[in-house]
Structure formats: C-alpha cells, structure tokens
Amino acid sequence: MTLRRQVQFWLISLAVFCLFLYVFSGVLLPFVAGMAVAYLLDPVCDRLEKLGMARMWATLTILFAFVFLLVLFFILILPLLGNQLALFLERFPDLVRKLQTLLSEYFPADLATVAGINPEDLQSSMSDLIGQGASFVGKLAQSLWSGGQALLSILSLFVITPVVAFYLLLDWDRMVERIDGWIPRDHLGEIRGLAAEMDGAVAGFVRGQVSVCLILGAFYAIALAVVGLNFGLLIGMAAGLVSFIPFVGAGLGLVLSIGVALVQFWPEWPWIIAVAAIFGVGQFLEGNILQPKLVGDSTGLHPVTLMFALFAFGYLFGFVGMLVAVPAAAMIGVLARFGLKQYLASPVYKGIGRATPVGDDKVSE
Image 1 (cartoon, rainbow, N blue to C red):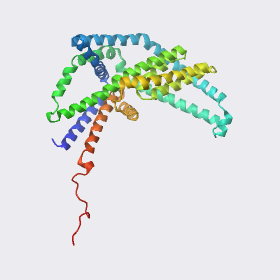
Image 2 (tube, helix red, strand yellow):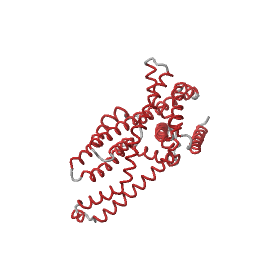
Image 3 (cartoon, one colour):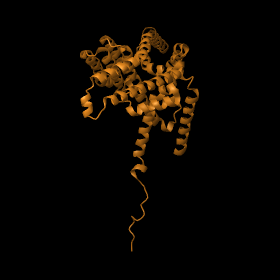
Image 4 (cartoon, one colour):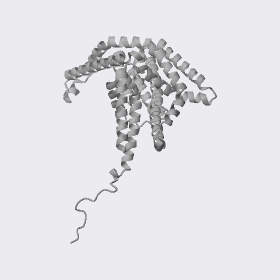
C-alpha cells in the first residue's frame, strides 16, 4: 500500500470514528465509563494476579471494592455536596452584593483616582464580570447535566457500567493480544512502539491525574471545612476535581474561597490568610510531591492543548467527548511527534537529492 493510500485509509477511519461518536453519543456514556474504569483498574488487577490470585477473582474483588466506594460516596458525600450547591446558588447573589459593598467601602478611592480608575466604574465592571461568569457556569452545568443524565441514571451507573467494566477487565489481556495479532507484520515494531508511547501518555495522565485530583479535592475540602469556611466542602472538592488543568483548579478555588472568606470573616484577617494558605500548601504538595510521583513527565500534554481538547470534544460530542478528550489528545500528540520526527529525518526537510536550481551550473564558454 502506497503512502497516499495509507493516509487515505487512516483519514477515512478517523472520519468514521468521529461519525460513530456523534451518532451514538447519547448511548455511549455507560460503555465509555466502563472502558475508563477497566483501563484505570487493570494495573491493580495485574498486581493481584502476580500475587497468586486468579484473574476472575481479582476482577471481582476490584470491582466490588470500586462499587462499594462509589455507593458510599453517593450515600454519604453526594447529598452533602448537593445541599451545599443548592445553598450556594441560592445565596450567590447576596454574596456578590456583600462583596461589592465591602470592596467599594474599603477600596482606596484616592489611589483609584490617581491611577485613573473610577471606583463606580470598577464596581460596575466587577458586577458585569461576575454576572457573566455566573451565567456561563450555569449554562455549562446545564449542558453537562443534559449530556450526562445517562451516566448519572441508576441503570447506567449501577448496572451497565460495572458489567461493561467487569467483562473488559476480565478479558483485557486477551483483547490486547488479539489486537496485537492484527498489526501488519512489516511495521510491527514501529506500531508497538507508538502504542507503548500512547499507553504511557494516557496512563500517566489518567491514572496519575485522577489520583492527584482526588487527593487534592480531599485536602482542600477537609482543610476548608476545618477552617469553618461556608461551602468549604463544595469549593474544595470542585477545586480538586478541576486540578487536572494546571493552576486552573487552584486558581478558581482560591478566588471563590477568598470571596466567601471576605464576606464571612472580615475584618478578621487571620482566617482569610488561613484560607489563602490552604491553597498555597495544596499547590506546593501538587508541584513537589503529587505531580512528580504520580504523573511525571510522560503525558506530553501542554495545558493549552488539554483545554482546547476538552472544549472541542465537549462541543462536538457532548459529555462523551469530554471523557475521550484527554486520551484522544494524548494519542494525537504521540502521532504528531512521530510525524514530526519522520519529517525531520526525510529528504523533504534535509533537501537530500534535490534538483540543482537553475543558474547554479557553471556555463562554459
């Protein structure tokens, strides 16, 4: 097969895959979630096998433990988060008004005048910005809820997803071996190398970053609750879960926490400083301990690329697209680096064997 036909084949395959996601996005959620759970837990299953446990019993043990923790979360933590979210949305306009009043009262008007800033204009701009932000968050939450209802339904969450995860986890090694048998023999080593690099990138991000997000979410939530911050559990969990985008989760959590802390604790500065210190400690733990140990440098995903992939896949395919955005971006990054490497080693880049430009030949008289 010529290079042109190979490119056509893979482009057609990509188009068919995207069309499949678009058409069946409404029913794919539990199956994609089951695949994600199986991929996430496969190393644990392999480790139990090495300890002498049969694959069947290792799979059952892991899934029972996973479902038990999930049910525990839904019974104990989710109702509390739901109550805090409802209360936060109810009190949000009042919090914004109090924060605006506090800033206008203590904002140095003379300094603002010297800097060419009108305090009233600043307050109006802040009001518009906060209103737009609240509207965007509301629309995003509504979109995610409408696209993720299948995943959140009882049938999908407690029946279909665990069943899919069970069968995939049980047959994972056999499926990998069978797919390996379909690889063209002429390119076996090259494709295996690309697959290993993709697996390292996806595993480094998904498995490692999930652990980082859960640890940071628990830390922020517990620490803010201990300080006594209103909605601390909700803000901390949200900041931890968004921490897969560098600095975004901590930044949003810090802004929300400081805003709530100013309204709640002012003028008691020690408590406000304590809230800010919690996020400082969290960033230190993430940058110096959690990220190097659990994620490392194997992902190759730039934060801008990650955000673009999440928005693009989410816009095109809904909540299913957001689930596959990170693995797809990691795979595309591996293929892009491979293509760039091939280009840099090709005659197209080096100019080997190019024709001599007209006028360079010496014309003998």
